[in-house]
Length: 473
Image (cartoon, rainbow, N blue to C red):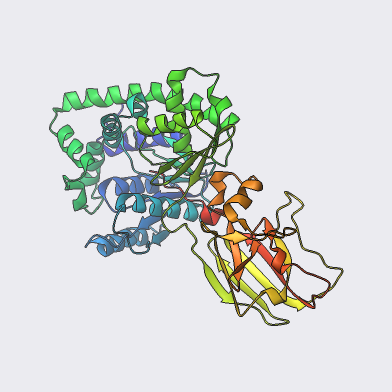
């Protein structure tokens, strides 16, 4: 007879089944495990340790709760006692608003970075069957319709196109069974008092479910699993369509939707948004706004808290941003003759070299797409300092070969820079003049001429990953 999941043997058997569902196995390489110190995550850590998985624990100390440092010490003690590697992530000071979104972004960004660092193929989370049921009920309450019934998948990429997977091997196990076994076998944990805070709707739903009799709750979990399975089957087909036909840079083409029934269009738009910005609310109202852009002019947009969706010529483009991703500017001293200066930002690295002009040299242009990735400018165009910043409304620029100035917005339109990419365009400013639109064009006022004796050689190396933000849940 198979032991029940509220015994250690039964729990381990259920965990093994969930682990197989997630592709976890003892000889499958390193795995990162998210551990807060609560009962669920400590049960997951103990089960993975018992099954001999090669694990690295990650604990995020937000520094918000009074007990935060005690929780960190508790997790550290468990890892030390069990010879398990531990990584601690301490985010910068929390913002005044948007706390949950900020915390979600911080932990998942840390999970992915640490997984890459230790060579792990996945990050294991302790979401269980009761969390799944709560999520489905919350989603339905928020108006996500049938989509909300899918709940959380066993596995999914941690961010768009990432090789790192989020896995949930406890999804078939109830929270009550985890707690029974943890209590009987002296698996320690710490209680998070915020889980009792009625200000969070999830906690209210949890309390309401706890009031149900055990038989009704068991039947509700079974229904949750069955409906969720059917919805996820359809969702998998939709994701395959998006991955086969869509683009990894956050584009969804009109042609991807046209062959499909109209009743699926809202769902596909929400699925596309989730693939690019996991964890954002799945609201039909957002999908309807996005779909309505199709009847408007190119360049129209829907502005959301986490980014912007633009109407392009043949589809939609998603421009993701997060707090701290904007670049207002950085200034350094211009290099003296024979000197190199380097300016490093979260968007890339700019190198400036002051050298004697050699007529045989020419501005450096990218062979791949014609954009300037480096340039030679007349040193006389520079004063004591230079500033690299994002372009601003009202900026004017004199492109190479033109006699007059042009508004930056008009210049970018002429160069056919998509509206969704314009916010990321940077300019180099000296003596109050834009001397270089990075990646696009140099200024006529700073070009090398027959009278040039000294030049500043500019090289820009972008850090693409530094400005890509994801915040999955």
